[in-house]
Length: 232
Image (cartoon, rainbow, N blue to C red; front, side, top):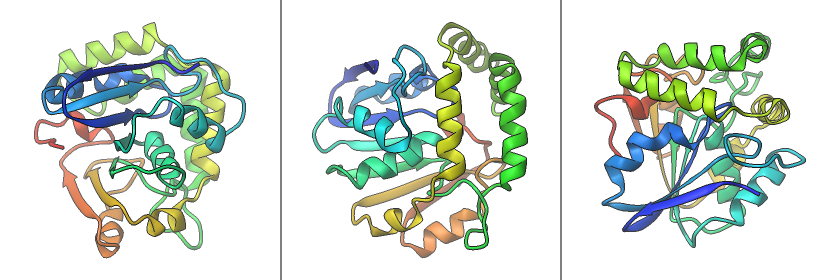
């Protein structure tokens, strides 16, 4: 069973977090926008307060779909963006918002905007040696706000992801290419990237713009919604 919580009033907005984290990551975002949207946050399978789900991308998405409101705005950060794209191919949503995300995270001969697969594995191996320490260091590189760092570090310790879920999430990131599915979506799509992002290069902004996607690049790292200039 997946954990979810809904707060606020307005059009339904669903937030999907990234690998290793939990929905507490969005606390500031929820507080800021709950008067404009009815916001639902979800802990991904095996993350935070959610049970593990056997399988990969489709199985995770099918469980998420069970608790989604009708025709929501779907916002996905990092790994959550891949899930959001896949969900958008399965059910009706009104808008897709990707934060520091890509339909394909890994570079190949047809896709220049991803990370080198070997470098990505090294990064993930380092994180998995001590996920809590690795994620907290990762957060500290994304923001200089000590309160943000303290709150996020507390949630990482309090609500850790399971080893199984971490492995599943990495498999999804390494082996998923939803480029064609993303291009086929006829819904309103927008993207917000971080200029200093080392995982999803801001050079992908040009590709998004070529596809007619509303694209914003902030002077931030991989967590652009922590940046002071972030707006939905």
